[in-house]
Length: 540
Image (cartoon, rainbow, N blue to C red; front, side, top):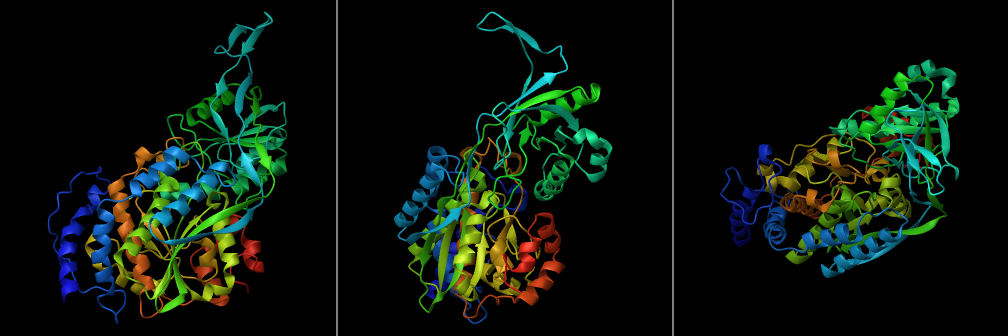
């Protein structure tokens, strides 16, 4: 009764730090206006047979995380000092060292696991200039040799990640506007596509559906461009106010098949108007001296708290450590890398041991197509029957509403039981969708129960992969609240008397893939053949 009494007091004290839905993104407070909340209950637990296990864990985790913590300084060092962390670069190596040191400082056993990244990539200095027609906005300047030069407008652009370099002299070609890049629009463009630099329109991204569409659209457009003999693709930026960002349209770590650049939205729209006003006359120069290197050894960082009863069974709490480099990768995904370390620190500091082992994994290679987590799954395939769940956080600091359960309704009851101590935080609103997008993907395809944190968009999408993704965008108070949720979820599943759910067979996965529409995603993203053959996912 003493433990339950302590928990009751702490719960009333701490639950009020979690804001109601209308105030999800409160500014960081130096002192929270705490007041008791109605509806808190001490009759919570990780399973029906262990009614107080999660309540006891929550009572200890809450004050550790919400109190003074190294998390903010850890995140500052990762983002401000190391900065953007593209897999395969020296910055990524420094991030791995950061993760190892942070786990050790938390008193958590840690090691790294190696794999090979197929190629390395780094952007050169991208240049996109309009070469014709003669424009009123062009300027005449006198060169060093005294000759008069005509300087045409330079558009703000960056290379698509993992895109090939242009020839040393660049690509000079007609600009052909193919609108949204659909099949009918390519048909209307006809033979004009051959040798052309294609301008493709993109909508402004403001919802998760918009973001998902950014990854589903390009493969078909790229295929049409290659079939038509285009020389390059210019993507209209999906962010406003000239904001530049980066991601890759090739999801296997290999270099893409055609040069591609993202053009600042306002510049791209001006270019579209220019092409409409001067049909067939607009010519552009694209120069992208990207640097391509050979295979390189990379690492995932793995912390571990061993279980006392079933140490060979494990629950994984993970986030990806890598990022793109235009910004410093604070929202995507530095804040959640720091969360994973802080969750490990908090659980370790409670002095409690779970029944099963909890692994805390910082994956690399996520931005190139979840390569690091795929390699982890392949290396641990013999033990996947004993991986009881894989939990992932990868959406910045928007309020957590629950988890996407990867099509697994059978695991919902266990997740609800684990989170029962936080019932008044409204974090038990789970969904059953299954999709590509983060490091749970290959665990899910292997039949392991997966949980991906469902979060409100907040400020994630305007800064997604962009130069503006910096530390000042992170609400540390919100991040601490998410850490409590993550730590309690991992603890609750690891300490259950019974497993959260079974590993699905291939036959059961075939049904899940079809019922959730994941089959269509696999086809759109080019993974279907690998799934069918068993190269990716549980073998038939």
